[in-house]
Length: 233
Image (cartoon, rainbow, N blue to C red; front, side):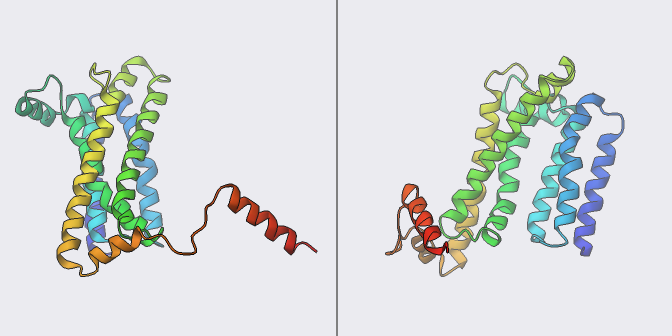
């Protein structure tokens, strides 16, 4: 762990400690922090074997801090959300909308780094797949919210959902996450277009179909069965 990594960890611990002191709804605070209890150790442990860039860790820390602030007040009652509500002349606290936008805006780049280094994504796919991952994780979280909300006390469930009476809340949250990821990938693409001389060539290469390309599905299965018969004694 570098000095900067230690600074990020201490900063998050400070925010988390503040958020853990007398939260508005203790049961909702616990529900919101189950993800923190899971992902923070995972990030720390995997960092020993696969270290992300300082930028990625900064973005992750910022998002996690926004999340635990929401857990302290509940997303529907964060004071800054009322400020946003006034600015946008909305009929609800807007903090949860901000955090879902931030999910895509802040986490799309760490996902891109992971895909480029582990899955070897390149060209167009280095921009499209992070957006798809953000949308998939956002949808998965909405499913988790539903499963949890129907199994806990009604008051805690409503606080955890944070829908504030909007029947399309989940769909709007996913859309904001996707828009945030799209904006981030657009910015990254602009930077690469400006400074990477191979940018255009990589985009074309990622969409090129090789001459020896073959269909998969039943044809791939037929080939595997054929090879298995040939390899058998």
